[in-house]
Figure 1 (spheres, rainbow, N blue to C red):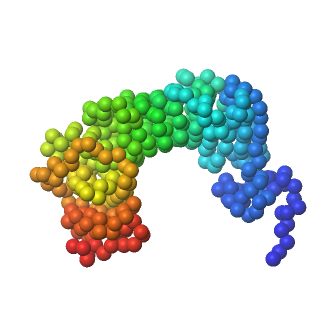
Figure 2 (figure 1 turned 90 degrees about the vertical axis):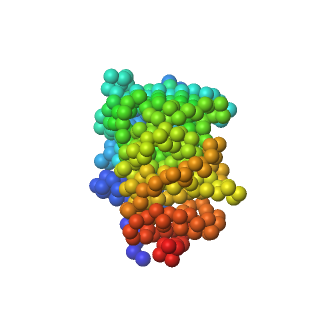
Length: 393
């Protein structure tokens, strides 16, 4: 084993060496040793008040140089108030993570967020032009930090991708963007009741959590839509109406990738399209992620079969069974009656996940095979094995 010639070099020299590497290669140096990893994990620690957060984050980004990523720390710890901490981390490809999750849980209160991403709403010119944040991960915003978060987001005029994670207490969210925002992800904000979207250029919408009232103000066509509403409606007293979901339905109609729960189709989509004599179809859908519940006494995939007849171009089908998934009160027995199925000519892969009974997988696979025209698809089971489609025909 040769001598490690870097071991005795000072941090300043190591950082200078890294500055000559492409970003991706530079980041891979963390795999070399603890010494290299510590260079990337060095944090800038600052103290102040909640009112200082915006200026401190802006200054932190101003000092960061994307072409020389170790010249200044990539991480910021800003301590404010009593036990309040904001963790800011700069990642590759113009990404920024703001994490408020260390805030006291007992201070959580209901609140709303309003993001206005347009040049006329830019107020803090101290935000840098040398490092333009294109992707922002916003985690665990609280009532006490909601105004700070709104101000920061609204001043990122180059933002293309916004990810909002685990914001407990968030009841209402409004996103107003006539600029570059084309991807919005909202994960596990369990108290969210209303979502107002003024986003004319949105192409990807990823949502996981209880279904809120979604209000798309402008027409836009999503290419990728994840509507993971397996937890059901956002609150028990939310009166779900089909017409309230119609605007969302139009945004996903031309999706190429779609995640959908069976109950959402049965309660909110099918009542709107069943009277259209088969004219409503997801013509561009190539990849479907279907989430279903499981009832041993009354196990049925009729909802899935009914939806598949709307997807003539489908190439990949992923079926997930979640026994805790919300179940529709509406009976789906009518779905199979007088239904003419679209033959699936392009389906190449079927993948089952979460099944605990191999017989259920085989039963479903056999039913699906009858809908397929041409070469049988590859069928993968929950344990990773493959079913022989030819054998099941």
